[in-house]
Image 1 (cartoon, rainbow, N blue to C red):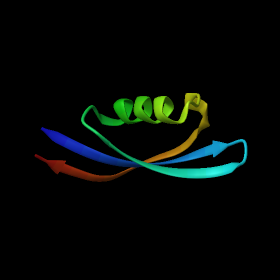
Image 2: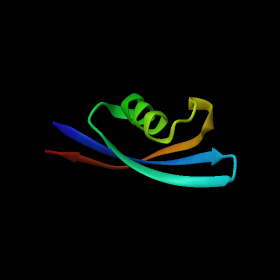
Image 3: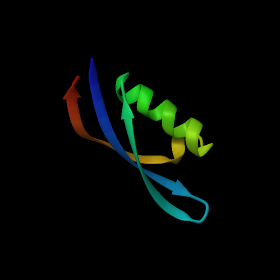
Length: 56
């Protein structure tokens, strides 16, 4: 099993926020987690960067 850590920059109405997520299903899974947790559209994600990949 491979876990990947991503850091995302989101543009919000009140400014910008940074979020870190751990995903088992790659970049697409990380995007889904962020949009669900933050209740935002996909276009609000300005930047998505892979920080770490770990084999479990």
